[in-house]
Length: 125
Picture (cartoon, rainbow, N blue to C red):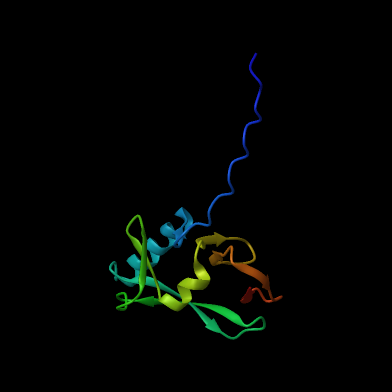
């Protein structure tokens, strides 16, 4: 006679490392790079002090990565992140949303604990 053992629950997923780039962001970045005629450039994402909640994102074009940057690549587009900003961005997904009220790049950051009403700044704990 065999006893039935309950199936163990799966372990919670470990937080994703790095930064992922969604297909929507890849498509838009590729279009923008073609318009700029700088296919080797990348999008630099940084976390800066400031904003209503204490931290804010900054995005700008960069022709090349800096010496200590972390580089994330998806389907030929690159994102550069400095080491300090990376600590706040681990597990983040870059997406591009195109809606009636607003269009733009958004960062889906699992580390954010709260945001302000403007949606431009955040806090982590």
